Length: 392
Image (cartoon, one colour):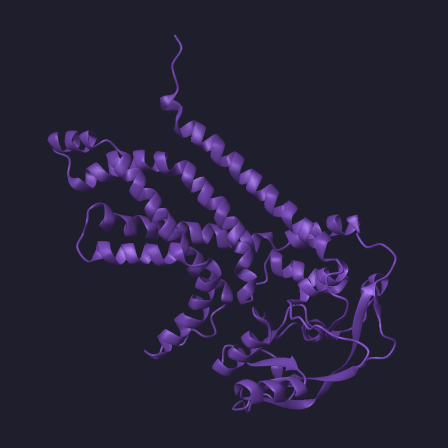
């Protein structure tokens, strides 16, 4: 096409659809298959520009998997919004759900890494893609068995004149997204319990100026508070298995959810420790001296006098920490945890309506945040009843 000048951009799948819808881009070439929802909203070329045969792909050292029939009990990694995910999910439902399907967090790079390190047994891809990653990144992949599907892909172009914004989809998406809310809440609760406990122990060496431990705690807090949670997720997800391999401990098959909880717990611990350090230091030193004067030990003084008052002082900030952590959990999908954000991306891929799904997600997060906020306000009022004036 010599008469046309093209400017190429790379984006996440959901951003492609949203950018096309808002006229930020003019054309999409991303292995787009046609479905009824997409046909109603976008124009496609009449003939597919390619037909991709989808195969089972494994590490080149794998000799136990020779076809899709050998995937029972195996871990298969696919992109949540991909044609491969739809195909393997359909096959799994038709054959007793014996395949353990997991979702990649960072597209082909995550899939490549997990196959190469043995964290996943197989994926569904095309011979073309396998040849490419083998040449570009030494991925050590191979195609096994016959093609399980021939995927026809099209160019996707400008919007049709029609229902660009579907308000009904907001309300139909909410129940689908809510079915994954328990995963978000579980991540939040587990990380807060573990993180606050760990944070208290991290705060103590700094409060009592314990040599060496105080400096280590300060560096840890500085690092965790000074780096983005997304980078921490990747460091924990990829770094911990690599480090443990050095002492012959293999945790590569552990569920991504575990690494998410570890990451958020470590991040929460850093914030909670500083919160508690400030709260403990705010307790009047005279009370500690009075406790010692009546024969109380250091442990008794801390647990019975200082800590209860410090918790009351820290409680409002703890509420803010909880709400902030709730919003941070939306990043769990970046390492393959299928939570509300992950489910949202699959809905976007199926319907080609990104704005509506993001509005539905915003509504859910907002209402959960409001509930938590109201809970902490009521709890704070009860905790501070002793400070309220008594009218006689």
